[in-house]
Length: 267
Image (cartoon, rainbow, N blue to C red):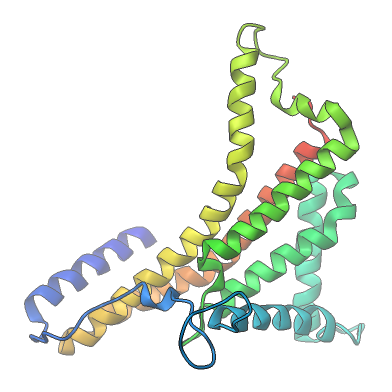
């Protein structure tokens, strides 16, 4: 039902823009401009040491995680405050996820997985603020997170299992003639993991923000009929709030699945 409303609102907004929008030759919508990395101070070329808008919002995400998980729960009150309640709920949620998906022997990796989840969910949430910068919409950010997971899982797999980790690619339950072919397929899919892991997060965040920008452009062009894209913006924004959590959850649970493969590689 929600998807039907979304597409109906989109069609109405586009049709209304074509029919009723005032003629403004200079009016142009550039939904991708919001993703441009710019220096915080001055203009010019960006070097590896240049403070940028991406740097600022990455630091704000780290600060938000610290404020919630450390400062917000520092009192350890018997009757928790709101911040302590949220921190405890997040802690219990991720802990249960790691235990259920990857097994009890994966609990030692809980701090790492918890850090991933909180950083991504905070980055996604901060990216929804007006005039903010969605850091997780950039593959440069999500690819680093995905590669860290990939390297961690691979190293853990070989350290714990040695050559037995290669059993992950050998489907012993399949007919003998098919096993080499399946091994190649499994090997390719394994190395594709960081690509899909990063693009899934970055693509979803970028798409949602671009749609919001397009509807905002329609709202500025339609005049009397601007209520149509405003309704659409409200619906899409509510969806993006949900996506901010879901994408962090998906990234984290896939990390747990990959970790389970490293700890128990045999098919």
